[in-house]
Image (cartoon, rainbow, N blue to C red; front, top):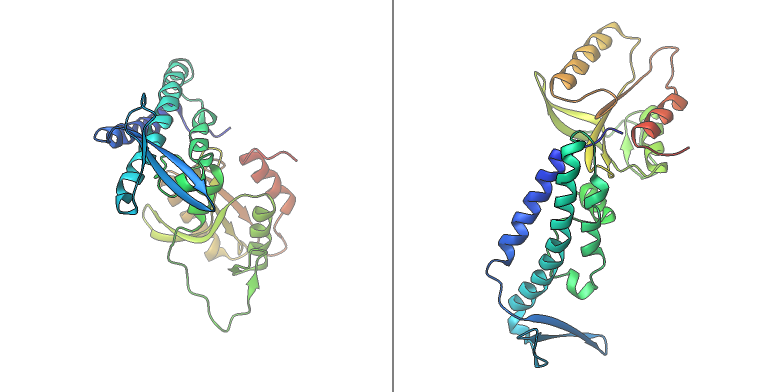
Length: 272
């Protein structure tokens, strides 16, 4: 549901393959062996794969350590990436508009299964889900100003929001383990920069979903602005129900939490 087309997945994979191949182009011969002794990691160099001879790598040769560990990662990455690329190309011929994100998710496991002493020296091309989410959540951005005299409303994640309804929405996202950022700025056609209420991460597809809560629909001027804003989202390429979600309330019409939960469970394919 709501797939990323295979064409885009092939493009991403080709870029990762190109980067890994470029990284391997001028790497030195030999391989690295890690030896842990009394809590200390020692790095040994085997000059040739057919040789039993090894030597300790000195601290001054840190660049060589990084290069050889990255080399080993790149080789493992490419062996799997080439196989996945062929499978995606075969699928593309028959199901061009389908998604096959699950096929390249194992590429993240290559980094995830590395020993800690190797991880610190590797620049991965595909992160495992937990690290991808952590990096995404910690990306800095400019937040909107809060009036210091305004009463504080805090979510379960201890984030300040502007209304009780936004707290309900944020807490539901947290409960369902959907990563989100509050009031992250984006650029919209004809408007410029706006701070969308919630920017959500679809980790299965690794795509962004926006959610605006329109909470003053009883006000005529607000309604007119809302309609224009929705049109700007659509003209900017955000499709309702796919990468743009909306909730409404105003006057006697309060936030329908059941309908909201059903919407996000459907969009993010979360079972009840």
